Structures are given as structure tokens and as C-alpha cells.
Image 1: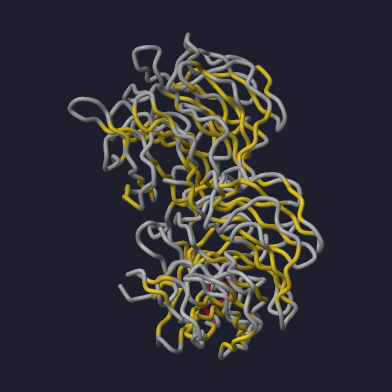
Image 2: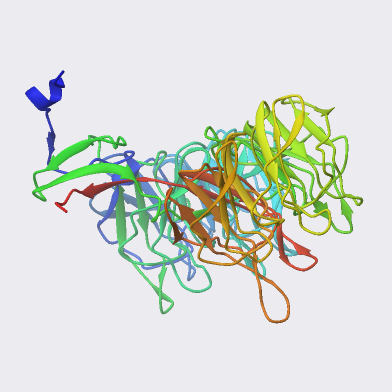
Length: 610
């Protein structure tokens, strides 16, 4: 029977512009009116909307007391401050100026009035909130970078809980009970750190993609922008968007600069104003730029077909894996390597994950940590501490851990129910460096070190292990990807490029990876779409860790964007379009607790005849 679409065809939507994933990703910066006074380190306030009015700047360097307001096209000089300030928050008609020192002034729309001082001397703090519920955090204090936070209730200041990391020249966004603190400087380190404030305490969440200080920010706890800044060097034109869990780079400023108005004017992510600052060459500027995101846009949807009438081209929206990059996430609470991981099956994402066991020199650990999309938290320990173990499970609430080394090498198997670990039947061959994949009811392990390296393969049916056909090549420390005990892919291990595929009965050697490596520990994806990341590659004297990442499309391996940090024996989980790696060692005896997140965006690809 003929298909309806073959008889009638189908409608292709005609659009004048390509679809975009969200409003803010369609945003751009445009020139605004120049300020009257050139300056840098400029405090600011405001609630810029689509017309970019209601912005305020005051103070700045060198020794500027001028106040200026913006109506969306030009700046107007108003009454001066009594003394210079380094940070500010509020609106264009009700603002607070803080520092230098402890002095505070309040703006009522026409004049500044001195009010109660903050409790601790500091400059260049992060700020957010209003004249009745304000917050400042961090800053440059006489003793160095400060972590102190203070809250303002409309009359007086009281100390709140500290930032996790002291820093100055950071920026803030949000409110007193739902705030963000981004970037900053803790000599000699330029920070990418982001922390969220819930009204009581600060929690580290996903880092900025680019570390910087003297940056500007605006928006809310769940939708914010961070732009400009200094990466020591260079000065930046970068803009990043916070969606409540991670940062994404969006449109750049026209002019790279640092120390512009902080906080930038705006309470959301669709509109902002940045004025003044210091451009490359240490020149202060009067330039203003306005960020605008389109109020109406076509939503990006995977698989859609459309005709772009402006470009005169047929297009398709697809996942753009080769162009995707790795971004920083929060560190593990405990640095380690050779751990097991879960949420790496077909349902795996970078929104939830589990990491357990691993090596924390000189001992193996039983620690378990859960990832909630932005941070790691400790949970119930394994019953048996171990490193160089394997783990798998389609979700972070249903996982399995098998084998490993304490020493001695282990055969113990444990299953996770979302809150605790339970010992179940052992694997038949105790080993470390073991590779595994699947679910808690249908899994497979292969290889490992007994020693020496073994080719032994065992399948798991939810209650017991069964020995089955061996690998063609014995190995340990490889990367295994797959969905179940009948479908798996094992790549590399033992300084090898060899790849084998399991069909439920036997292993078949298939296309090799491009780079030899070992100690990958953990695979990402399945037999048709997989990824290997990190590991070590052989060298004449000693192995070196690699940042190399390769993608499997079911036929061949392709090198794609590298990790930021070379590492071996990390934990890893997810799919080829939404993956994570965490921990690992960067050199013999030197570990890392860093997390990197791989998130694939959609792209509008032109369809061409072939």
C-alpha cells in the first residue's frame, strides 16, 4: 500500500530566519549612547527592559563621583556621590553604593544619602538585591580576598554565611534570597567559580566556561548573563548565559573590556546594558552596548525540515556532535580515580549521575557521590572499598558495582537502589581494571587484570554471573559502552587501539580507534553511538595522560573536541550527545576532582544534493 506522504507529499515550513533553541541564544549586542564621563570599575544598578532604559552608573576610577542615568538612548548627569564606591545594586531610582571601605550611600532617584556602614572593609564585591533586601559577597579586604557575605534589611547590615571561595572583582545577579556570584580573583587564580545563595548558604554549581574577573553580570538566580571581564590576559568580549544549571556562550560584545558597570543593568536574560570599562591597552571608555533577545522567534526542534527564504536554502535541524565542546562542572567532593559510574546507558544524561569507589592515595575508598545536574553530594558508601572497579546502570538510582582492587583484587558485586548498596553474587573471576556496561538486570563485564590481563567475559541476569565467550584480545582499563548483556562495545585498554563488539554470543573485532590508550575506565553511549574520552597514551619513558576524545558512529571513529584536562582512569557516563567525565589522575600519584560536561546542541544544516 502506498504511503499517504508519497501520494500527497508533505508541507515544508518557510521561515525568514533559522530557528533558535531559546530566546537568549538569539540575542545580540548593539551600540548605545556614550556616557558623559569615561571611567572603569564602575558600580551600576537598574532593571533594563526591551527599551534598555532604567540603568544607573555611579562612581568608578579614577576617583569619579559622577552619577548618570540611561533612558535607552542617552546618559544624563545627576547628583554626585559623597565618596567613591566600588560596588552597587538596586534600580535606577532606588540604589545602594558600597565601598570603598565600609561607607554606604543610598540613591532615591535624585540624591545620595549616607546610611549605615557595612561591617567589614572591602572593595569590588559581588552584589544583588534591593534597597530593602540587599546582599554583598566577597571583595578585596585588608587581609586579601574575602569570602564574607552581608545582608541589608533596609536599615542595617548583618553577616550571613560565607562564600565557599574568597574572591574579589566578581559579579552578582539575583536577589537576597536567590543570588548568584560569578567569577572573580583569588590571587594568583582567575576564577570561573559560580555559587548560588538560597538565603542561608552558598553552594558551588557549574563553572563559567571562561575564568575571568572584573566582569559584569545581570539577571536572576535561574536566568543570568555574565559578560566582559579580564582573563589576565586578555580582556574579554564573551557573554555567557546561565539557565539554572549550566553556562552557554552566546553573542559576544563588540568591544572587549573589563571593569564596566557591575552589576550590569537587567533583571533577566533577554535585556542588559553595559557601559564604560577598560579596553585592551588599559584605556577607559565611554561606550555603551545593549543586549537584546528577540521577543518572537522560531523554536529549534530536532528533525524539523524548513526552507529559509532569506538564504534560499532547504535546511534540517540536527544534533551537532562534532561541534560540541566540554564545559566545567563542580568538582567531586573527594579527588579520586578508577571509580565506577552509572547513568551511562541509553537513558544516561548529564543531569543525574553516580560515582562510587576509586583510589584516594594510598587507599581505596568506598565513597559514593550523586550528581544533581550542578553539584556532587556524598551518599551511602559501598560495603567494600575498592578502586579500578567498574559500574553500570541506566539511571543514577539503579546501579551495579563489580570487581576492583583494595588490594587484594575483588570479586564482590553490589547493587544500588537509590539510597544504599546491597551485596549480591560475586563475579566468577576476581579482577581489577574490569570493563562493564548494561543495567542492573542485564549487564556484561569483560577483561581486567587478574593479573595478568584477562579476556574473560561474564554476563549478569539480575541475580547471577555466567561465564561466556572470551574477548579476542585480553586487556584491562578499556572503555565499554552498551545497553545490555547482548549489546556492547569495548574500545582500547592496555595501550591498544583495538575495538571489539559483542552481539550476545561472541566478540568481533571492528574498526580501531585513532589513538592507542589505556586506563580509560568507562565508556559512553552504545554500540551505534559511543565515545571514548581521556586515558593515557604510551610514551618512551612513561605514559602520559591525554585530552583526546573520539566518537563512534556505528562504522568509524572520529576525533572531536578535546577535554580541557588530560586524565586517565576517570569516571564517565551518559550518551554521545549528553555525557560527563569526572575525577581521574593527571600524572602518576596526582589526581583531579574536576568534572567536565559534554552537551550537544542542535544546528540548522543546509541540505545539499549528493
